[in-house]
Image 1 (cartoon, helix red, strand yellow):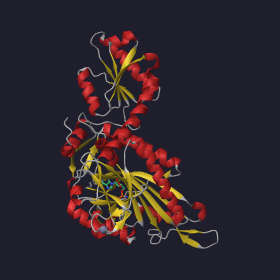
Image 2 (cartoon, helix red, strand yellow):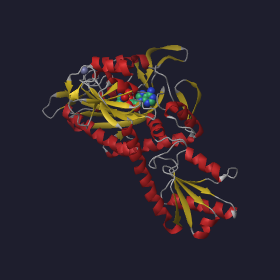
Image 3 (cartoon, protein in one colour):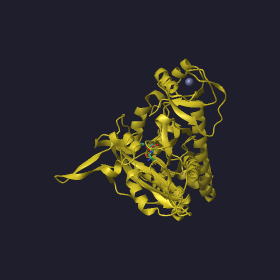
Image 4 (tube, protein in one colour):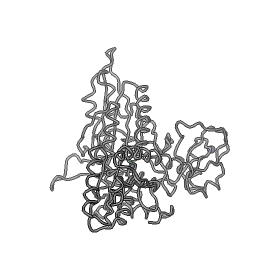
Length: 468
Ligand code: 5CA
Ligand code: ZN
């Protein structure tokens, strides 16, 4: 499988099909069928979300899919942003509905009327919930499997706080939560505070995690939004303060989606296919028997190895398919990104060991049976770290630090440029280079310089990129 960066999107489609991630032949644009292997990856990521957010004090809920129109229209900015992007339910049977319903494009307007009922006093705060559901957006930009779909497998966390400071603390905690998740997904990223004109509809401000795809485009893989009182006022979410007065809550959200699966596949792809980080791989170790002779013993031994690994808590699978050669199986599991392969043949059995082969580096080693489980455990965590490290290096290598507009135009990846912060200058950058300002990076010190467009002195160094 050829992996030229210019034809990344064909590579991507080919991998999704061959690896059994999803089937995009479903007859509705932007809606695909999850296949068992792809769904296995998604479910592992969902479980990671559950584990991390629960540990950080969030409780899981499950809201209805439909939102009444009047409820949906309460926050003016939000409706401006999403009004043109929702699917409407207008009929029940043959009858036209009195109140039209929307399929949630995200769940603020479903949840917040309930928040107004649930949140009574300061003792109820902070209030933190999340749900993992499908949301629907009638996207107008070109749809692509996983990356931009119309039925989106979605994660959303919503919080409410006594005051703005506490909501700000939540955003800081969200950043820590994101760091934990990104590590498990082996995803490199930059956190950008989006420019005013690019923030979420209804937010005070938005922070996005952007990663870089092989074709150099930026992909927004997570967003955290500070709402202040923008929703609590129209939805009348108030609480009783200790001093007996009532106050509106301040709110935040955190959203991610199936796009993360697309990011992992893209970021770690190579000419042989996908590479999955061990933390979320449905199969961490595949056992391939090489039965040149003593076929039955070798097959049986492969099954024993699968059982031993499973008992040790490692997600293992013995590929005992009769009709395929070992070579074909190697190719197939490499394409599907299984982090580690165990090979077992008659000679290995005689020597009392197995051969281990890493998907990420291709390195091979022979290991004795009495220590092989420990070795596999160590290798899996080494692969996890190495994948993140090499993806981070790859991302850095695609970023050109420059204040020269011609060089920026020519560069295929991201740029890091001085920018005065003005919208006019961001627009000029876009016109001249097709790259857009991702915002001001968080946690990075800018250096003094002059805006790439107007020459004004500035300390902001912004990332600029073509985006998905
Ligand atoms: N209500 C807020 C936070 S829960 C919200 O909806 N934020 S969002 O619009 O930014 O979406 C959260 C994340 O979902 C985005 O950062 C992006 O990674 C992902 N996402 C958004 N639209 C799509 C889409 N059409 N296909 C796949 N993923 C998407
Ligand atoms: Zn400027």
